[in-house]
Length: 70
Image 1 (spheres, rainbow, N blue to C red):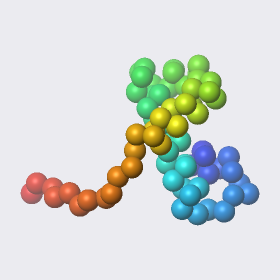
Image 2: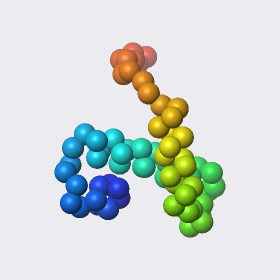
Image 3: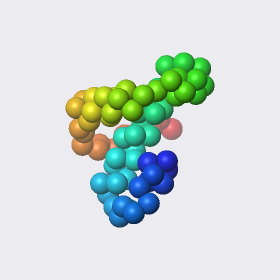
Image 4: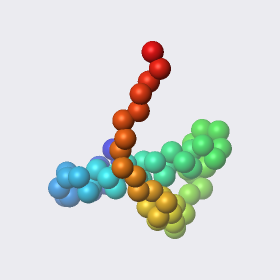
């Protein structure tokens, strides 16, 4: 939601939502490096950009249904 809010003039389309999910995933990954949000207070734009680029590099998948145990 923060990424979308930071781009108020952008069209709310598939690409914007994909980028928002990527940035949300990256920010969550920094949260798990330490307990709580302490790590976020020391983040730089460069660290975020590098991790988003790495996420893009390592992810590409085709959705496949998963069966849940009853």
